[in-house]
Image (cartoon, rainbow, N blue to C red; front, side, top):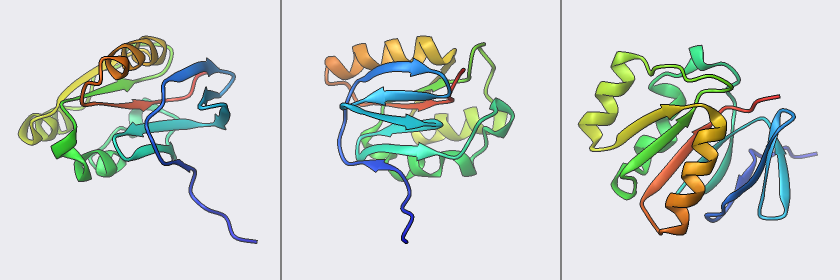
Length: 125
């Protein structure tokens, strides 16, 4: 049996969140998500204390196609670590942390406006 990393090759709004996962593009995913211009990826992160440069490597790989990244930090707003904020600034990306629910709603609006947006969404129960 071959196990692949979760990946949806395209951009899609997030239809629902909660119960430890998300629904989008008539599919469901258990766990956190990275929504990037190249697609939607499963993100192996469950706690905002794990927000590091390494956990955002896929975002930085696509930095030329991203103006803003919305960071859903769970049920509560958690600030981003200074080193991460600095790295986003140097890459020309506005990083905006907020609760996961607010990030989902904002992502959907910006996506509908065809903006250069990405989202890093921690799953919530």
